[in-house]
Length: 254
Image (tube, rainbow, N blue to C red):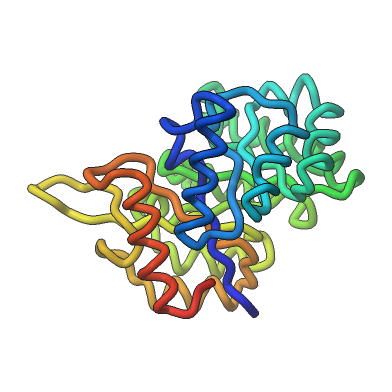
């Protein structure tokens, strides 16, 4: 199966302040070699039709979004319509709102978003939850992340696993990719390095993660979309995406 690389646009959020700037940014993304993107962190508010037109003009497919919590809760019909317009099958949430990060909160969120995910499923879409590190706090001997896995519908409630945040949370990215096989359509590839006694995000294959094992586990888990992200770090954002792309291309990604 072809392993398709995408750019997580949150990496380039500072270059998306206007439609014109976004257009220039997506042109550069395509020139690097990426063919897919995640619509996340884009600062200019554009109608779905306009965003799709700009992406299409550069031969980029939007495969997943990060959509605000309030949109899922208060504007689900609009969210569904916009994703159909974008031609995007996965509606993603970037993280758990603070009020749910407790022993009682995780089950409450799971119930609430199970219903939302099922409604998305009825409309031909999937919901995907993106992890950070805080989901690996234990409550009554169980990770918050385990609650999200065990108390949601595996057919409609997916996970966008983030390799950096898994490692940062003290768990093995490979183990979690395997654990959630079949529920990870999209994954965030991001490395972790130590520089000057500090832990930082780095370009893929430039840090300390076990990439050969991550690649193997991801392929076995039938991941469809490999999205490259770097939230912050010493390397300029476009250069960061270029380094990761070139490293991964040598490993058989496209």
